Image: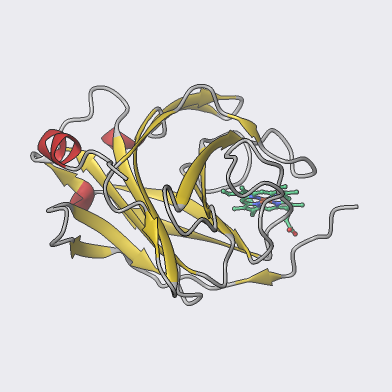
Length: 206
Ligand code: HEM
C-alpha cells in the first residue's frame, strides 16, 4: 500500500543567479529549507527543447525529483539519486512521467539526458548535472508547453530518504516522496548565450 506523504516543505521564495566556478555555468538556482538545491540553465533562444539541470542534495535524501511543469502528473520529471557507489558513477538521473498519483512514474521516452561534469557524491552530498533535451517543451493531456518563451515557470520538487529498490539502475522502482514543494522559478536569469559552449566544455568523464 502506498502511504500518502505528510510533509510539505515551504519553498524559499526566489531563485537567484549562481555562477559555478568549476564548470563556468551560470544557473538560476534555488535552495529549499530542506537543503536541496535545484539549478536550471537555458540557451538564450530556445528554438528546440534544451536545458541543463543540476540537483544538489544532502545524503539524508536518497532521491529528489524536479517536475518541469510544477506538479506530479503530465509533465517531464527528472528524478536524481545517489548510486551509493564509491567509485564510478555516483549519481544518476531517471527520466519519468506520471499520469496519476498512485503509481510509480513511467519512463519518459520524450526526454534525452546527457550527463555533464558535476555528477558526483561525497561524504555529505550527492549531485547530478545533466543536459535534458525534451524537458522544457512538451505536450500532454494538460496542453502544449514551452518554457523557453516564459520568463518564469511554476516547477516542483519531491524528495525521499528511502532509496530506490536498485540504486544503480535508473529504471528502478521507488516509493512515494516524504516531501514535495511547488515554486515559481526565474527563467530570465537562466538564459545565456554561452549555453552551447557549456555543454561542449563540461563533457562527463568518470
Ligand atoms: C512512486 C512514486 C510516487 C508516488 C507513489 C507518488 C504519489 C503521490 C501522491 C499520492 C500525491 C498526492 C498528494 C499527497 O501526497 O497528499 C503526490 C503528489 C505530488 N507528487 Fe508524487 N508520487 C511519486 C513520485 C513523484 C515524483 C518522482 C515527483 C517529482 C519529480 C512527484 C511530485 C509530486 C508533486 C509535486 C506532488 C504535489 C501535487 C501536485 O502538484 O501534483 N511525485 N504524489
